[in-house]
Amino acid sequence: MDRRGAWSGPLTLANCFVTTWEAAGAVVEIANNNPLTMIGCTFAFSDHPAVFAFGGSPPRSATIINVGHNNPGNPLQGLTDGNYKPLPGWCDGLTISNLYRVNNVNGTPIPGSAVFKSTPRRSARQQATIPHGPGSITVLHGLGAEPAIEDVGCVPTGAGRVWLTSLTATQLMFRTDSVGLVPFLWSACLR
Image 1 (cartoon, helix red, strand yellow):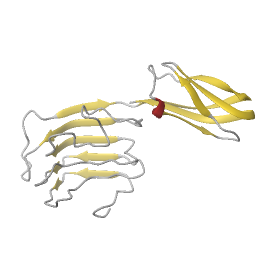
Image 2 (image 1 turned 30 degrees about the vertical axis):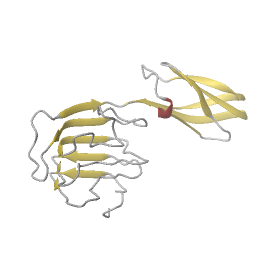
Image 3 (image 1 turned 120 degrees about the vertical axis):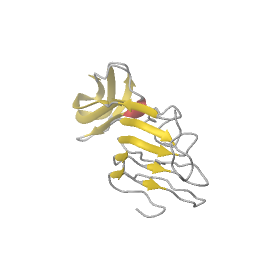
């Protein structure tokens, strides 16, 4: 990882204190949906709030335990909304246990600022086949609630195109315009 680049593999930060006086700031950026683990770290920057930035490909799972930061807003930009709910596209879960605010530079914890949040993974993945294309197939996903459309995917494993046409709290419908058998892998998750 360079000063301005993104980490390209799984990243674990443990028992660290990170500070900077640089006007541009410092961020933690993860590439290629790799998992992130931060345990026992403090991020305190003198002139600006700490930010853990997750760009176009946020980590598919994150564990944040006993981490201090000096951001008065949401330090997990691109990862969670202002209420620490994972943003769309998450499937493997987010665990936050004691993410707390600290004073600038010295890293002293601010009482009453801790966040505890856990979003367990709920996902399904199966192989399916549309037996006589063009046509469609309905599959039961078993998630117990309707997934967001951006959290459903399908990949043909043979010849032909497949796409999602509808979804409910119990099922997904996929369609093809190809002729004959069209096998594909589908996945869905709840955040």
